[in-house]
Picture 1 (cartoon, rainbow, N blue to C red):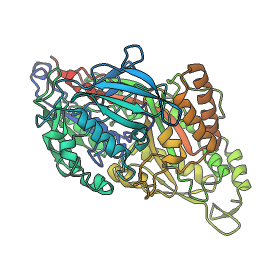
Picture 2 (cartoon, helix red, strand yellow; picture 1 turned 180 degrees about the vertical axis):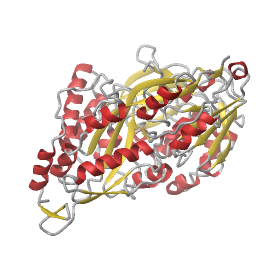
Picture 3 (cartoon, one colour; picture 1 turned 120 degrees about the vertical axis):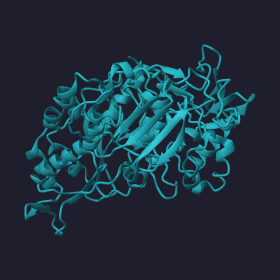
Picture 4 (tube, one colour; picture 1 turned 90 degrees about the horizontal axis):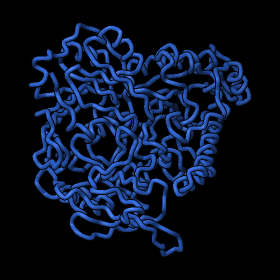
Length: 560
């Protein structure tokens, strides 16, 4: 219910690697290993859990905090900070009449009794109320304000129990993906809501132990370089096995792989590491020395289009861009066909996937015909121009240092050049690309990255017209394309509240039809993550969805 699709996180882990001789750690010393060094490809733009949807942040924070609920590796919804999932069957959820004549739902949530912030203060209902107040404020800049606005009130029963009063009944009503904030530290930072994202304690005092209640807490941050985590003495669960975890950020993935092989890092995170093609090549060279685990998941590689650009506002141009790409060849040649071409944002692994919607096979003649219809008929120096003499030029951006993505960019640039489209590539570091350029819709043309979702994640924040980031809403929402479609809006609204699975499947079918026809983005392919593990590391269990493996970091251990 509170997850929606805004719980998507931006996945920028699509990188490249190098080769050297392995030094993976000897079996006789592995069990005594006290420090685990993880390599990832991004540094977070913020450490606040509710601002900026960025996978690097989620990956690190999952070791230090817990959402109220999450999906586990088997895609089952489980309590993480609560004691029991609210359901109609157990009496913790019930329908209630609303003042406007509609029907809402009440959800009684009890937080873990022993949950305490790292400074010793209990995690309480007051923290939940404060988090709601921040999330629903129109100027707070949180990524998923809509989820908080749906909560009409929070009734506190005691320090650990509260009742959420929600304005509608949704099929995922008990998916309480709340990331609770420490009111005793964040209230002062929230005194001026519009400045909250710049004053949050998570960024001004990131090592403050009172920010964390998970198995680890952040004890050192070197911006752009690394984050150090150490066991949190207030953690109520099983004690973590490592005395120290270092997350090193190596944006150049040739260096990332070299650091693994030299022993400077122990493990390349599957969520933010090598792309599938790099992992396949790595396994052929070094598979005897590492465990390489592949996990297909709800990861969608795509290109957002800025629909405020007059060129891209023309659907014929958008269709031509897709017809002009040989996406199957990219999948076959780079990923040995293991990453299927995407035709919409819904993954074939998800039960609502439709396989009979419009598709765009590689057809450069059809692409050229559409560009002609759109008025781009004159050629000068091999580039199309319109009747007014305007050159058909578009800017393509992604995260700098991701060699595989940069390779894909070159393929796109070459194939589109054959159609007479001039593509200018301009990439940025991930923390800038996600923290400002994409979030504030500063890209002028095309932005390539990935979404990752939970099962049947409703795409409200990415496709609903009321989720377009603007200066007025302090850039809340994730509809970075600026897509506006009344039928899409209505479908999203209806899907969320439809409890009948068969009826919901029909709505999802129509949603995918609209998506494929309107093309607010260019779908590329559905990704699989590759986890490059030393043979002595056990307990890492990939999930295949937005909740990272680090949510269960207390199970990670070194074995002989």
